[in-house]
Length: 113
Image 1 (cartoon, one colour):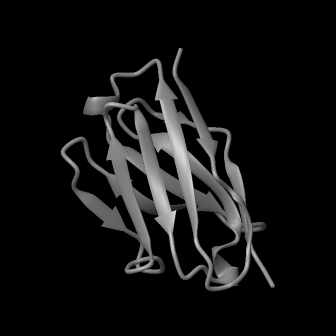
Image 2 (spheres, rainbow, N blue to C red):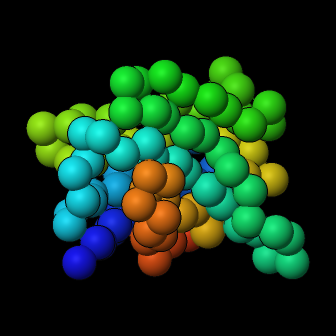
Image 3 (cartoon, one colour):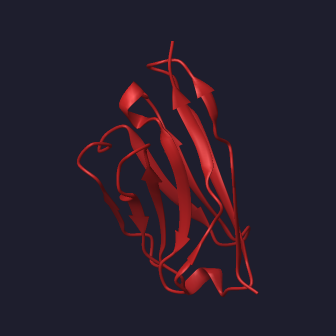
């Protein structure tokens, strides 16, 4: 059974940082492309960052230079380091195994003073 469990969300002030984690089980993590997506209230879910099995990365223009996606295959975990957070980054953030087509349950990130 595929399971993706996100953690690390919360409330942060503008300009602050958070690191999201996504622990995967039930998949061969090392061969899976992984991604972080987000959905703000009233908006469609959008891709934030993707990392291939080989470590190549791709980012949405809105987060380039502020967010970093990384993976630790030994821990079956993908991370999203988010710096210089803005109120418009407020959303539920979801982890996805692109290769296996599985989603996590999401974690709320709120950027507000």
